[in-house]
Length: 379
Image (tube, rainbow, N blue to C red):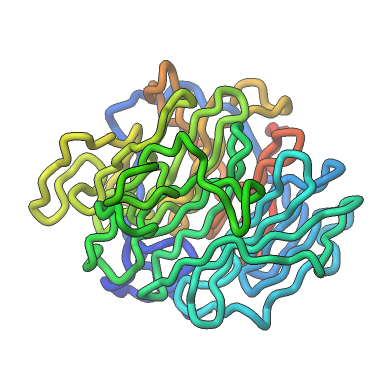
């Protein structure tokens, strides 16, 4: 990893680049914070540049390391690699192993990475008795990336059983190719596919742009700059997306579980609720439920999860998130899909690149520097 420097060319890019500038993150002053839940971070393991994680079979938690390895979390720390694709990826720019996911029955495991040419790749493995079957590996989907930043790469299975894939706008700065608002590309989008419905995958018939000759059928929602971590609320099914800003605003977007898709989150006409470079707000713009400016130490939002665990009752129903440069773990209090409070939980996760939800719905924080920490009630 390169030493962090003040480079305006990368300010606002995803959390993986160590050259991100230390430029922001104050909480929204418009929402009065309530008394925050008392939490602590318990370090449970040390990884090499952890980048993503997922709940695995048998109550396990699987941790991806950016250079291409996957390990399982045990009582003694992390296991030896259960998967190693380090010869197939690179950590140049914002590349690497960027996402992992299991399907609902833990019968298949998916990885999201950039290959040696920088192409975003989603691969599948069969799982038997909790172990990957290397000989079953197949490629599900690929997407050429024009630049080495804004790859996105997070993957999750939704409550509907479909695989959702988040891709950034393709990189550089300011969305030079207009990908965010262009429905004829997968870049700058949240996708929804059925990886088991056909080979290499099937398109769900109720995807919002199916049948539109000017749009890609895989698209679920669009207008994203660099969706850095999205999740589904295990209680409500709502989706939350942390979308990294260009130079002024970080945002968190939300869609209710009842959504039929098609949301336009505005980029690159909008950055949060603000026109970007004299852009015009689209008529169908869905504004973020929360945004924060760059007057503090933050620079790159890291989306998290709505807390649905049992260890911290006071935190139930709150959406946790952080920022790569600031590291403070914060929580949004929500009511009827709107933010009613913003709480500083009083803990710092370091260079926070991801949150992980275990099978028991307790949450972990991943620090790119290595720490894997569980969010526990304060003593």
